Length: 583
Image 1 (cartoon, rainbow, N blue to C red):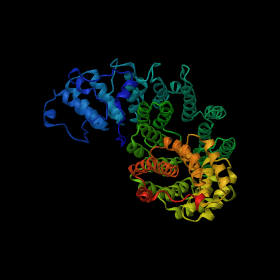
Image 2: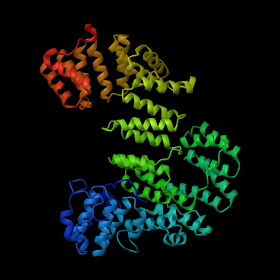
Image 3: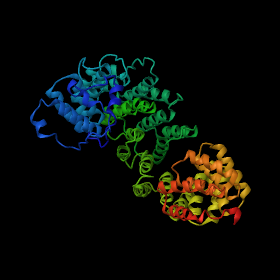
Image 4: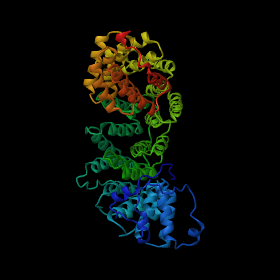
């Protein structure tokens, strides 16, 4: 499967696999000391120079071409160059580099062809090579070969995925005694839990429905992972024609606080009499089993190796939406925004994770130079899921960010109308802000005060309503107290400190305003509005040279046009406008 995702830093993966730091041949090691992203020429599908194509002994040049492609995030080209180098000069180091480049780029089938065999390389590389080849064999339906490859009880860092693959390969090969035997978890709680889930699914596949029912029932009643196991058990019940039992199971889990998108979708489907989800195929079951170790690695801040596991999952089950979400999260954490966007974009419109994936995709565009794309995507999402309140809230938020306040308020009207008396405080807060920013302060104030009545200690409400009252010259003592409560709840928030300092400024307490605004500016040194407020406070305190310096800083930060014009006017010796207290 050709992946649109770019490669992450390969040296981190090599370290995770226990390889030596230098994977170059002695002839190129000196030129290979730089780290990824240090200016190496990127290759976007470019063929190597004719000399390199014609001279298979040009190992050094091929290696450097592979490194350049890798540094530019093009693992497919990198693996090709490394593979050519390895063919010209066979050796474990170049072979390992070709294998890892292909695997990290999501080219699992190619990586399986390049994977080390026997005792080549480190233990970590040997195990990952076995896992990659086994995954590819399962995906190709060559189950007996996969089972033979996975024979034995492995040790080492990649033991979990080898152990979890083994029962599915055995089931595909028709070896039911091996498939249904729980492996020795060696103290690994994750392997133990996932193996029990796999056993339940494999009992069903083997036609042993009573055993499957008992295994699912034990899992669903175990406490941990109740939403996951309950959903799987309910799907089994639906497949057995026990729809009422499935509905009762889902409802009980939701009532017990196990709410999730999957559970909600399951109960809606079962109540509507929709078709039961199919049991997983051998490949899908094996892919689902590997998803847990991948998620654990990402949670433990090892996104490089976690992404490698996710490519194995997606080789087995390209439609596994949870894997695409996790891949997107890992790529976003690594700073590869383009790859994160590509991963989030893979989740289908029919998936229970669709709105969540679109939320993350939209978030990857908000605040960027292409922020208009965020609004376009939000409109598409709301249209695709018209009855999903989260999708409508996404659209409303993007409209607000784009200063289309009236339309944002109209979208929220629909959400509140559908919710009736059950509308959440956040929806009233969002609509109150949209109405206030649209110049409809009286309507906005009504929604904001209602939100505060529902959530009296919420810092965001206290901040926005308190700040607005100060700006309007209303309820000033109460507003100042609200802002102080917001800061007490989040003392490290530069935005909240700015609101409190600005309130003191507007109320004429400049001596109190200055240190508070200085603290806010220290926490948010790149926020032009906060720096502007500090400049105003300095001016009123008679510190005009410092005020000018702060206003010059505002202009250097690329402020919005309206703020730029106001600051330029102040710098022409006009000073700041009168405070609320002086009006």
